[in-house]
Image 1 (cartoon, one colour):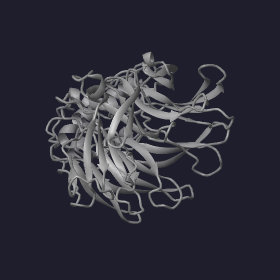
Image 2 (cartoon, rainbow, N blue to C red; image 1 turned 90 degrees about the vertical axis):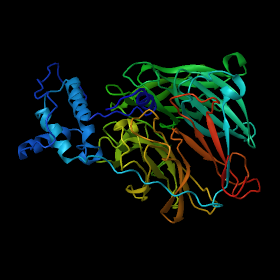
Image 3 (cartoon, rainbow, N blue to C red; image 1 turned 135 degrees about the vertical axis):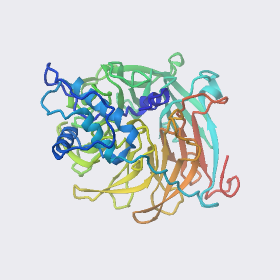
Image 4 (cartoon, one colour; image 1 turned 45 degrees about the vertical axis):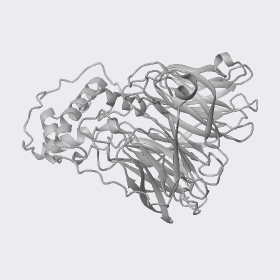
Length: 535
């Protein structure tokens, strides 16, 4: 499957893995697998009973993978991994088809190659006007870690609690740093910084309710993906002690797998803040937890932990009150073989009822995240969903895209594919052209170490202009820099335009380190450097 070190680095962020079969243990007895020789010719024929057996086996706990999703050459490693995962699951309740027959089934139906992806047209001159500027706390201030490639896993914008000025919280999961990037116009200064192993994401909150914003952080535990117990949930509480980097770091949860998201909220309406914790894990680890705050009288709150789900692959769990009943609900995107978006409806006591929002018909669909926005301006929140995990297949597949999951307001959702983009990792909505509706900015992450993939001409940032209600047109902003795992939008310089902050996630270091690039939008201001997109 062409597993190079660059793929492992890519997987370290998304955790994507091809997991075709259920991995829950049910017995100590292992079945004897037959047909280990995978050298069968792609022209081999299967009888109808074999086809039924293959589809039944490969679709036992999820939709069977579509043979057209990857080329013929890719299926040998996929099928081998599928049987390996079934073997490791210690299940024996399924009728095993002959392994070469499974391979033949998929190879006979797979294309020899996949078509080259189509590119978005360049943004017309004068439509949007940007100037770009690059930033790095390690290059600009600390003169440290300059030989380490940047691995910016998350950028989140928050207004300062002191004066409302823009602050970007930046996570570098390679260096292991979480830091504040304070913006004043197009200048940046750097505030608090803490080293916390391998941070995946920050969420601003006020966990101790002292009126000073603090942060909860998911710590992956290790950079490369694995099943381990090194993950943590951390609470970063601001302090005046500069020797600690400006944060007191408290461990809320340890001894778990890779933590991808932590979302605070008063889910049981008792006046304190609880947590929903997404443990992505990897192949044999992963859960979704509810942390009920049972005592916040001490320095660090105490929580009662309840397991909500034992599936792996949870990525994002943003909160909202979807039905307006006064109880905080949350959404979840679940990757790995599950590839779905689910709504967790709060019953009012901190327990939840699951409801399916979207489920892909492909266990290697490559979910990478969700974001919430009212795309159609109808007063409720819709979902921006992306699927572009390159670690799921290692091919530029034709189904990587950004989708609009439209909230119909009656408990149902409509799925609309808005634009294709190989390797898409993040999409965020904002009114980029100041015409009163929501547009979308998308970034992609494709490892440079992937064999046979030339990223120089691929779109790395696109924006989707909403040309009419619910209709979008794709425009390219950047090509050839497919190193963006995260981005966020806001009017950072407060000039009336929405700016773009994107993170760099690379496999090799550059002579001058860049962690964050801000595309300063000068479309409606007088600061534009030329008629279009400039450095």
